Image (tube, rainbow, N blue to C red; front, side):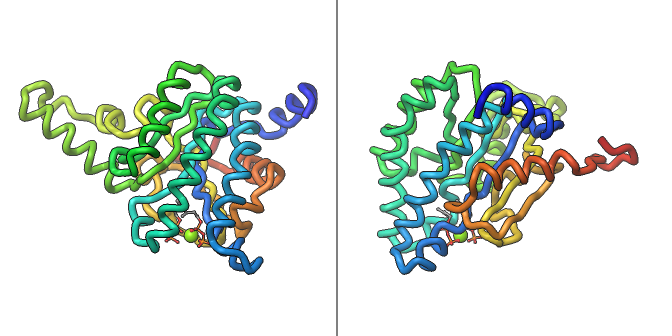
Length: 248
Ligand code: IPE
Ligand code: IPE
Ligand code: MG
């Protein structure tokens, strides 16, 4: 896309969400429908990341949160879980330099310590390398669950109270939100879920309190740049009231 085309596009998509969350669902069905093993669907899904991240960054979206592996996905057969982890590791190894060149800051969202050591190490290396970049903030939900995240925040607040660092009266919504993995980021404005299911599956429950929700039947590996643009356009036309009467 030329600079002029990009300008025209971002004009058309105003107001843009500051923070987009994507539940990248449907990889397994994409593969099964083609008579392929589910792992091929996960690989095809990874191929879509480059375009969606690039477009988010070019449009000037501040933060993109991607749901890659939930705290509930451990229930899947071990071979599938292992394949997912090797795909994540390959992804970090292959893509981090390009993301770094694009000024993208990578952050893992979730309990990555519980992942296989090699995956955790690559993930930390990616965060370290790109951490001070000032462009798109890319949060990757790895072993992420909204409830586990909330529990982690509650424990950290309780610990600070016991040690005398914090008074109960000083806990407010802002300081509570700062204990989440998304500390310092704006609330999620738009959640997109591909793959046809109409649920959140434990994704960013607190950050999405007032997010607009878009559910599409398109399976994640088929979710093209055009599909993403269509979702952003739909968001631009939504009337957000936040409980008041005036839309904006
Ligand atoms: C999403 O695709 C990827 C992960 C949950 C890791 P699925 O693997 O859930 O694909 P479907 O829903 O079975 O098609
Ligand atoms: C949500 O998809 C998790 C990710 C996309 C990583 P799932 O396929 O795990 O969700 P359910 O089981 O259909 O709710
Ligand atoms: Mg699924």
